[in-house]
Image (cartoon, rainbow, N blue to C red; front, side):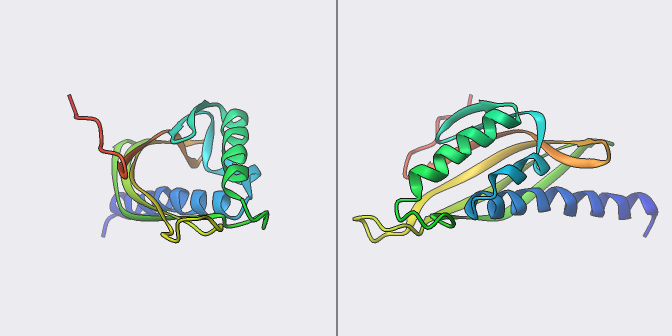
Length: 151
């Protein structure tokens, strides 16, 4: 195996790890660590709205965490399960990707169904100072809402 192919595999794994760490940091209420996932000027579009820049992302996701932490446990009011990660390198320091999201609620609620939503993350990545970061992400909810038709 040549060194270019080995580097490509390393890049894929580092990028895949970003999404996994994102889930762990968000779900466990380690919101401050999201600066290790997103670039300083990243754009995040999820169910709670559009956020730009790491400070806005951290504040917005902290608010979302508080909203779902109905039992005031301080951790794991939801669990984000990431699957079917597809990554395409688009340049030496850029990539794009998609992955599935299965989002469960673990906090008490009237409805015993723990499934919150099924979605698809659309991500853009960039290597910045030698580290991969998410620069843009948009969550497309496919259940319980229907996706918007693609143009």
